[in-house]
Image 1 (cartoon, rainbow, N blue to C red):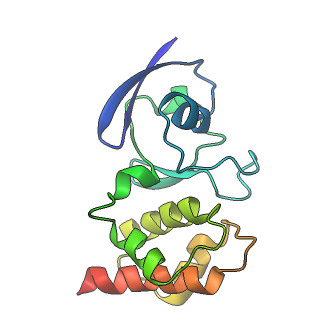
Image 2 (cartoon, rainbow, N blue to C red):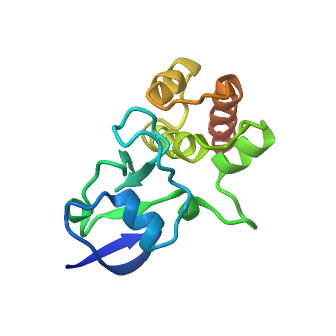
Amino acid sequence: MAISLKVNGATHSVEAEPDTPLLYVLRNDLELNGAKYGCAMTQCGACTVLVNGAASRSCVTPVGSIEGNEVTTLEGLGTLDKPHPLQKAFIDEQAAQCGYCISGMIMAAADLLNRNPQPQEADVRAALAANLCRCGTHNRIIRAVLRAAKGAAS
């Protein structure tokens, strides 16, 4: 079945069953590999993308349920030449160790900053609580989000 998706500002038509997880379509059909396959149970956050600006776990989001909505992946936030403030802050703070969780962390942080452009540390911790990092760079991740928020305010 052909499903029309708007991803990172571009419209795509993909052949998929409506119950296919969005994550599979992003990675396998559109070759957007920022969102990672982690737990497939919404417990790790590695697959987080934005749907209409709100964080969504793509591992359990049926592709048929988002037809007509705007999907943004890590690749759609910024470019190599002009990274999104969150991407730049994560680089500046060296917030990635293995990097597996970082896409999901950045996308969850983007959702937070969309809702609350000037979060306090407690807000950042709460917003990222459901995203897991096994490498232990949580403090750097928190600093990166706060740095991006501060930069957006300047």
